[in-house]
Length: 163
Image 1 (cartoon, rainbow, N blue to C red):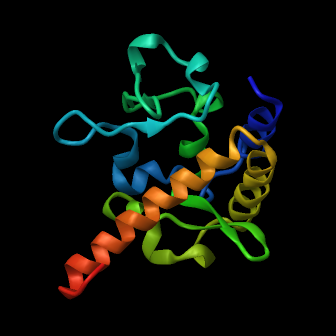
Image 2: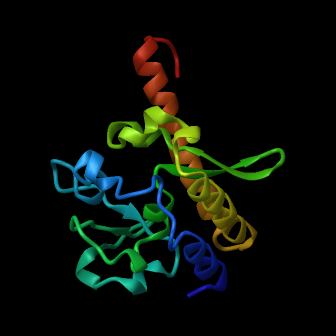
């Protein structure tokens, strides 16, 4: 596994969005497939080696098909950072709420200030080594672009104007 990915995952090893199991609030909505059996979590390059092949849906990018329970020590990076995402700003890489999480995560209504400050700080630090990695930085940018496109569609649908 890439050292940058190892560092990023380690920073998020022992922190969670709230003090306690946030899965108790939503019945682990982010830990299972959607109604059509789809969904899953994007895997960063190299993460698929942590999981049985039967759990990984090949593709671009490969996805982990969630089973509802997992060993927290092997959770994918994007599970560890949920409901946040890394974004490039003029001042470097930061984290903000991932707008796609509104459908699943009751923590979204709390905003960043409602999350465990240690979690938010660790998530921000965890994005840094990935952003500095020439293979993983484009992946972070792609992840943020997918979220921006989703958000534009949602805004367009809600105000009946152009996205």
